Length: 406
Length: 79
Image: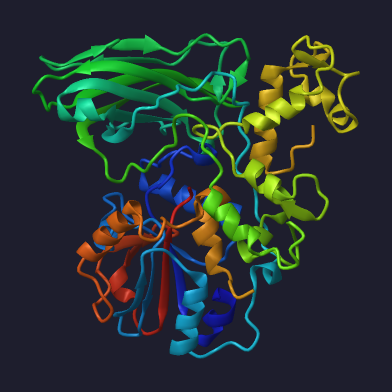
């Protein structure tokens, strides 16, 4: 649409707003304007789009002014008045709007025509090493303000509270320390783990008020360090301050960093929603919608039949690379563990090569495709791929967006 | 295939195909979002809200300047 209508004098903008789904693909909410601009550069890189972006301010004033919708769209006339407003962006309808307002396009450009260079998220250290917290209770993000620091926030804090804590003042608080992938750092497990400590006003109890991350055998990883705390704040609405200490490490540096957040006992309406709990079922309604594109009724979708939204990811969704996307492939691809992580069935597929049942896959047991990358999967070089190493490999495959070919 | 580049954000900004669907029509989530959307008081014919934001280089940008041409604004994020 941009290609078709920009030459006709229509200006297009994407507006960057606060993250709707923090932690998806490892991304975490930026805490400064500069970090939001980094996210825009990252979005342009990963989406391959040339459409200009605008960036909401750190108070999220634009998001609030236009109704907090995550994917809304507006068409303005040359006087700056709203002609069309839509809760959820709908490209088909938008094209109809522009055809009506500006004029039709003889041969509309499709995404496939654009040859957009879509890049994967940044590579990080392995994940799937430190188990994620399984929290089934609904939690809401709390307002958490980073206090001034001479360092970037290589690690971002996410604080959430359950309903009881927000209501009666006594309940559970989630505390998660998440590496920001845009800084390219990892947890160096050869140095001291992340440590936190609360400064508590009178009348507020948090247990434990101090804690540290687990000891991890793997030299480096990028899993969040998570804690579930008991909080009794009574009637107090006083904010609490948490200090945390960690080493920010990449290939060239490993520096000690101490930073603080002030946490308020108020839900953050701009905090987005992180997925947690048991793995979600694949979204059946969406799969049905995609399968409606199966024009010849052979139970699979060819590249020619694929709708645009599928076409852009066709190679990724076509897991076995046979040139068709089946319902089973859609279900497998669209399944995700809690808060990201490798699809559990992919790990199982790798481990299914364990013929002698010793809980690991030897080079001899590995199928041909897996054998080609065996040395990389065998991280500790002991000649076997363990379940943990299979998890790391699955996560790498997921991040790369490539097909799981164990 | 009628869709075009604007779909890229609508579907991809939210990170994965599984997230790319709007709330179920007629469902409670859709109703909640719609109510908040309408509570802004904005409607066709209203001026777009005037807010001081930034361009992608970090330079101040006032939405008041969105005049002189038809303008398409799509909201999104990285995830």
